[in-house]
Image 1: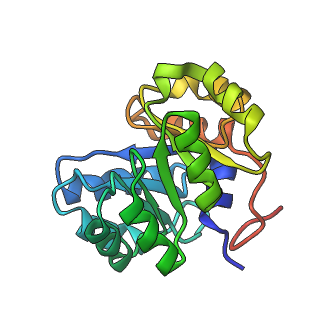
Image 2 (image 1 turned 45 degrees about the vertical axis):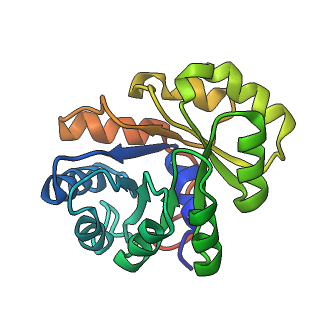
Length: 212
């Protein structure tokens, strides 16, 4: 049994978001993360040649030999959504409400972290797919996540992203985030990077390669 992408995110707690200069750089960065104990990585459509990077990254494995879970972020159109899924994306992410992407994800049975900021936007995303990306998270801070958590279903998956540094991830998790998107500030040293993921990791999802 393979882990659902949501389960992988809930266990990993930190979702690296890669905005790279080109596909090769994105692939190298993804490889470093996978080697450091990360399994789920978000590439973005802002990277030139992103679809090629997704296809290559989707074939990689993490440090425990598990298949990489590659998501594609900054997906805002149906064409981008279809291209991402054709390239091998395991989940999609948008920065704001994106009905076109929502429709493609539903048709293809793919998890979709739809972006939202207002309580109404976040609640709509959760009703649609059980999950939401809260963006830009730094505007509301961890207390905003606490307020959202108080009025959303307990099982809702919330991934705040935007302006969050690795050292602040724990505060967001304590506020009720399921996982936290981080776009910069992760250490370059392999040992330090591995320590970040090891410190934050939650219970294993119980699927492929996992030991509950």
